[in-house]
Length: 259
Image (cartoon, rainbow, N blue to C red; front, side, top):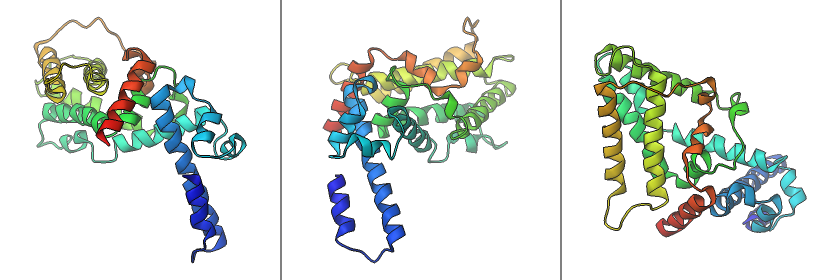
């Protein structure tokens, strides 16, 4: 992969020297991230070394370090990409903030959007929410602060649904957020890891899981769960997954079959 990049630039192009060097560096960085993502998903983050990544793209480990100081930094770059992909299209919660919109429908659409992300980008979803060996991303908030902003908008929408009588008065929107997140992560893992019988529809199960969770919330229940400040770290959801290596291997097989 990298050799192809090098040949392209060495054969000559109308680019200036500086621009050509920048393009080449971007191409190599992209190759490193793609190789690392595939290896992390196939083998599990903790089982992949910088040398393995370097071997995959026919580069030296020392050269990898000139692009990324550590394996953790490679993961952080991939996580940042993943969250940008998750919010790349307009989040349904945004449109639902309009006074004429139905807030509960907006909540439903936002969490269905989260499930669909797992379908469109299974490798990123696995790294962000399934592999328990990846480093925590809470100290990346300066680079991905938009996540907290999106969560704030969604919890505001949940509160708006409660104010409109669509959810019980006094319900904690942060608890609702965690309950619905957990429901959709679980549905996504079932689909990604193929934990479903032949002939069954994983998307239909995800849909019914979301509707069951919303129905339960509308009827009113006494919550035992109490969120803490650490719940602002999206990687906390990764603890919901089963065996990390087994799950990631299933994702890797599914991705290969779909390609």
